[in-house]
Image (cartoon, rainbow, N blue to C red; front, side, top):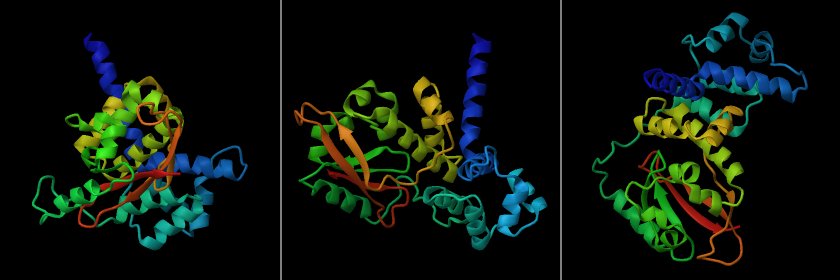
Length: 266
């Protein structure tokens, strides 16, 4: 029993290292860059360095995890050399340059959170909700509660519901595709805040679900936000036909990490 438990802990630790480790992502991105160019293998470190205009030694140091100076121009050159998409670029910039810090949990914010809750409550034509940096439900409107009653439960968490609750696989028509996209968002959040205990607890729970582990290991995909993301929903208690909605995501000022989300007709 002890040996099995130790093995589980080791696997969980290895699972966690796969997202927060910049060298791991750089190697994966080199492989993707090589595939895009039809090379059949990863782009060599030497070529990445040449594309950036830096020495091969410098790039090798970066990919090995050595602390090297990274300016905005250098990050841009790195993103160009690896042909990164917008979400990967955002992760890269935030990893080194973000000066935004999360508001202390529970701190007095001058009543701003209360006004955000009022904004959510005032939405009467479509479901709306407010989540924190770890997808915990902060508040929701009446339509959101009608569509998804689970949000009324104590400590409701969107990521846990999507990835771990069997109900979500019935209500989200293309669940596997959506689960992969949620995992890509979790990877981004963990890449930005690798030591966050709530996010790490989420990852530990997710890695024990076989399908989620398979999707995670399929590749180092990163998504910053699901602005405009389309969802197909089967909610017979709401509609006898399939619902298609898009998620409109807003980032409230003075509340870093929080997201206001409205599910609007596609």
